[in-house]
Length: 494
Ligand SMILES: *Cc1c(COP(=O)(O)O)cnc(C)c1O
Image (tube, rainbow, N blue to C red):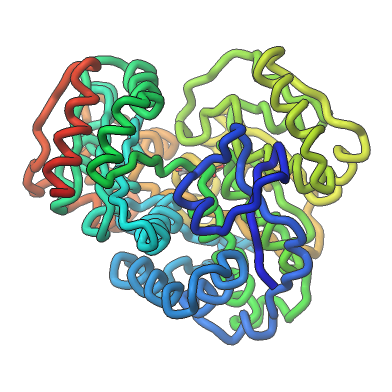
């Protein structure tokens, strides 16, 4: 049976997964979603006998069924090979009586690598029919830009241009980007703050004249946004694979229900867990862990989503989000596909800043989802506890999840915490959580001190930056950004 995708706000137009991946977002502003996922269960016994790559082929083939098995196999082979520092790609390790699902062994040491190593392969494959070149344009405040660069570098028929605000990203984040190799990448600092850069990227996407002049040269602009199903689907894989690892190690038996706790921002990661559940994975609870930006804690507790609230800058910056875009897909799924209701709620969010869901929907959400949040101080305490009690070094995002789990009553259900970044990506905050003084230390000095203090080793992907060659020294003004994109297209695609 074929799977088609349509907008969460209307089911009039059905598209293949390839089209959904190339377009990213539906024309009415909704997100692409498929119906009847529960009718396509994944065979759990098979999952438990296979490695990560085989499970990736199985899950991708189920959800992206217009790709041929050969195409899927090629994409998996290209995305999940020697780019990962762990042969298991996403190993599960013990932490006290819980488990950690380590999603940070990719080229940029964060969980976004899992999806951003795969999305470019899927896009490259999906575009073959029409022969156009795809230029990804991204504004980044730090981490996503590098993960996208690493994923798109060298992928046929694609190019990528990343803009970051000059002086507003950490030294290590800047070095990660400006040392990126590959003939199809462009990186440029912009004189301005992140909002200026982001707004200008949106203008570039909305510029019809630019789109038609690029179309004449067989090029099209696209984004590597986290709402793309090409990013969502690869994240479903590791939920199944984690379960398989636990069955194989004897920690659980086939059929045992488990709990996943997910450090959440845009709701993509935890939504992938819900899709895994719909596809038959025995998931009892998905715990949504937030930092001080606790809009999701309020929503899951009360049914009211209210984005009108103060924005907090925290030590877990990838979770500093007030509008969790992927939540729209959950609303669709728990309303049994009520597109009118979803449209209405999203328009309320837009115009009034808040919406309230009907109580039956809230009950359904609460049947699977639990929630909690941690302040920066509680996050630091969780880093200290994990190190002192379990000898596990956590990053600031994963520590939010550990804190939230520590507040939940323990039951017999095995608990798996998703570890979304390597602690060395956030060395300074991890160090100070452990009680060390970081005054006057730069990024590399913090890495060294963390290594000495804990006897652990920084990942080569980060420590090698010290001697890496700077390939992208350029800076431009906001007004020059479009010219940078146009010349990158000319340089890369001609
Ligand atoms: C992006 C990110 C998250 C949040 O994931 P979402 O899918 O946006 O909920 C958590 N931790 C880290 C380290 C991240 O980079």
